Length: 409
Image 1 (spheres, rainbow, N blue to C red):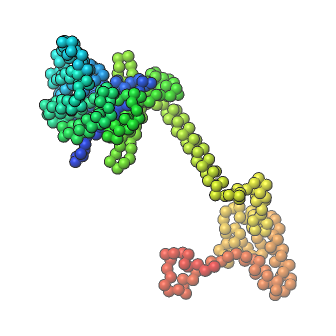
Image 2 (image 1 turned 180 degrees about the vertical axis):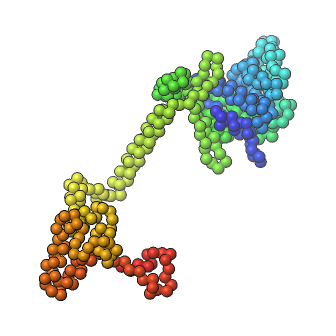
Image 3 (image 1 turned 90 degrees about the vertical axis):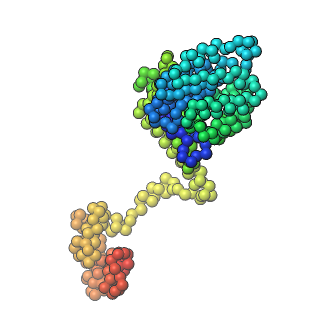
């Protein structure tokens, strides 16, 4: 909710052609739409009273609830509240009967010092209802002065009476007006076709979606906070760069209608994160396996168990030469001769130091008895390593910046 209130508080950006529009979408299966709307109005009124909002007042169109339902939310004397009453007599039946609606006659006296009530009898039944409503909103905003925050408690009566095209045109006109700082509208998402909702969301800068809370969230929040959440508020805001910023909060409503936002327990966050990570890993493994099979064709990219065991039994050269113990130490100086920078004694290998006979030493002794040819063979068996010799002295343009250029194999 803080993200949505901040957007309403900041209002129209500098140089923007339109003011931001937020849609509060609720449904019959989720409780809390009117309560969350009241909470947003109260937070915005507090921001206006503290001088932290672009708007200087609130202009509210009441279509589903009486004006007295919203009058107390702006009880602060520094906040100007103008209520357009489209609830008391939306179809003009009171005027046809020759009487004044009770809500309209008593609401003006109950408003605060800065409050004002404008009755709209028969606004939904009039043939030019959208034009009349636009004129009334423009006149009320101009009379209040400066920029106003326009709030419509529900667009559903307007959609049922005039259609999505007329409502979209009305909202577009309100957003383009210079006196509009921001616009907040509620709508019952389960009562209208998806095409109508998509047209409204195309105009909106963000949406506040009410979804049901899962059984796990309800049980864990009840154990942690002592209150069962009625639902989850999912806020999605569009940025100028095209990205979407999302926020999700659990909320609970008490007997007085006050809204309290609940933080999910840490156990629930870790469990949800672990479940999402496991699901993502499983999906990734399935996708990788299918891609591997598709690329492999008739070949096998892996090893069978027998092949893996046979590969593990293969001995590397240093293992069957009796130098395994020296290689296991991890120090190359234990098995390299002094000519290669090691400390292994000539005539003895690393395996002989561990108390084992050195096959290379035995072969060297046998070759020494054979004469000069044996000495040459002894020299070859004693070294048996690749030596790297610097050649910088012979190349004047060589430098030490790249070590690979200074080595000859």
